[in-house]
Image 1 (cartoon, rainbow, N blue to C red):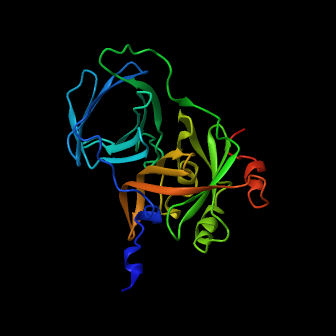
Image 2 (tube, rainbow, N blue to C red):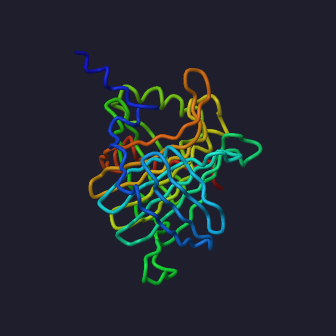
Length: 291
């Protein structure tokens, strides 16, 4: 038996260490009281379909939803809207310890100059419960808790990245130099002024953080030169276990053709020394994309 036949790894090699999809929410209905003033209902119909609607709108069905669980009471849910004029994704962090929720709304093609560019929008809210008054606080929220850290995330036996969380709304990526597969990625990234991309850091609860990034600068500068276009990625990270689950939404090149991308992933992590010689420049080099 050739055991290598099982190691297909998924798109980009980021799915080997992902956990099976979680369906504990099937049969449940949630009413989200959102801080933008427009509430939202989400029903998990079965393992393939969810029903959703903004307040005052008719319910619609989305198929192929993704769901992962990062601790006993926290889920990451993602689905693409069927029939939308522009490809649209709704991603939720559902926190049943605190009955709070965070939404990422991502649309492809809103920028007329860059047809694959994505600009995510973040909204916070609470989960309605019978007999419990909804207050405007507390909420999940933007944070600088993990700024100054560097983590190597292992997605598969051949795929690892190093995330440098160096400032409030950007991150930097590199690939561990000891990995043979890193050379191709590092050479590709050498074609852009720096490895900074827009990001958001959101605290869900103690030890649990949502890190979200969008491949924006590379899309504007090199576009089709890289197989992954302006993907947006949501990483729900558990630093008590140093594990993450997530989803990628966007566009990729597959067998010479562009294809829609909406996939789950998972990784275990290793927290690195930010003063290590090969890491230190990732904190000190200037970000050319900001004044």
